[in-house]
Amino acid sequence: MNILNKMKNTFWRYFFVLTSSALWVGCSSTRIFKDETPIKVSSITERKTLSDALKKRWFFSDPVLDTLPGISLEKTKEVVGNRKASEVIVAIVDSGVDINHPLFENKLWVNEDEIPGNNIDDDANGFVDDVHGYNFLGESYYEQMEYVRMIAKEIGDEEQLKRARIILEKELPKAEENKRQYKRIYELAKTAVDTLSVLLNNDQFNSESLRKFTPESAFIAQQKALALQFLSYTDRADLLIRDLFEGVTYYTERSDYNLNVNFNGRELIGDDPYDITDTGYGNGNVINRLIEESHGTHVAGIVSQTAPFAKLMILRTVPAGDEYDKDVALAIRYAADNGAKIINCSFGKSFSPQRKWVEEAISYAEGKGALIVHAAGNESEDLDILKNTNYPDDQPDFNTEFASNFISVGALAPYFNQGLIADFSNYGKEKVDLFAPGEDIYSSMPNGVFAFQGGTSMAAPVVSGVAAWIAAYFPKHQGPALKKILMDSSIRLPINVLTPDNEEINSFARFSKSGGIVNLYNALLLAQNRY
Image 1 (tube, rainbow, N blue to C red):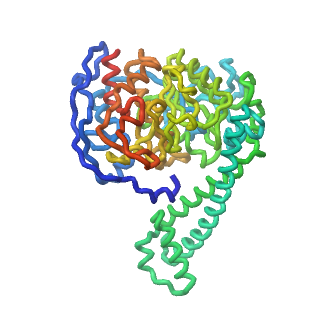
Image 2 (image 1 turned 30 degrees about the vertical axis):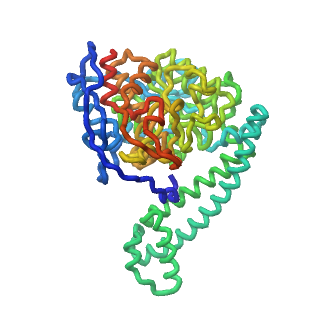
Image 3 (image 1 turned 90 degrees about the horizontal axis):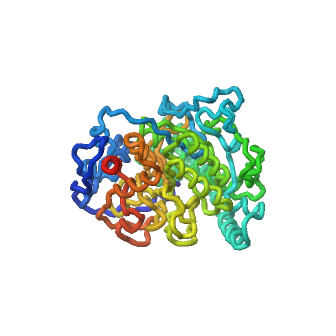
């Protein structure tokens, strides 16, 4: 979220009361729960403040005990106790991952049939040195958006190309103008902050401390006034500069690479991305190439924190731009062939010229018993409207779902009020299956650190982690059964919420197929009763 979006105010306050009551009964040969009373919310109480510690782990909170829309992780751990989990592999189809991060110690999937670093395909599976997964991007990182590639290579029918050109003609000038504006604002703010940091002997000053400072010249007074104006967006000098630099970087990448019809990021790889039979490209090095390539590390960390016993298979597939259908299809097949029970896909795009390759891969994974967990997207759009596409999609033509192992996830904010749905999240009674925590999620980042990020990309791995618990303790449940358990066990909330675009208020139940939020405790209990 850029800093200008922080001016939005969707925090409408309401008061309710949380309770629990019975929902299911059943029997099973694998018993974890003695008390078979699932969590049910019949009324809600809003928490006014979050401590720093709770902010970092709010997505693990309990809706009743903590009055936050978390997954009840600690409550579940208390019930499970020291019962040993079966091995479960979760594939992370994403950008590169900092596999040396301390969080991932002893948590990576290992291909025992491959000898690391010998540049030989020891297990003859077509992938050289695929020890912890595979890198389908080679040494590339920046990429075009799919609709830009379609224009550049004249891929697709005339109607698709017309739509693509309309979008590019709108988006490119906007990106170029935003790049100019961010650069100008960054330069002004950087000069002001650098100047005042020396005088205050503090590079982390805020507006309160700055107001107490008395300038000794007209120039310094001008810098103070500018800084106070900028600090109204991010009220700490060093964080302000960081946020503005991220804005410069984002719009520079967008205008120079993502929306540039003359850029070819694929030439570093050397394959034909429009020939599914042209394989053998890429390499076994799944680590992120730049510190800015942080998305996969953050996503993998969410899975690892949610399901610490899970083994992570890393599939570097998503560049800084739109992923190729070929890479996604091959990554999903690789994951399914190598035992991944959960395949996390925190990516998406509005055009998919080779979508059939991906759909066939999803069906292939269903045959292998794997669940595909997909992020619903961050455009604040209703995906039930035909023009609002987000691929991959298990109902691409609004027909019957072609696979039963694909679950689409929207994002929750940490508020039990009308701002419950994150203001960036896509939604849809038909196209989105359920919601999970996705705003302000604290997880791993490259170089061994942690940070907050938000997006449906963060909500999907929460669901993948919950699914991993089911697969670990009730391993006979296959992909379609996992999806059904996750949806049927979701908590329905008696609350009206704002649409992410803030245009109307509706019952939360109307924003997804299940009408609920994911809950680990309930999911594991229902998995036991259906085992």
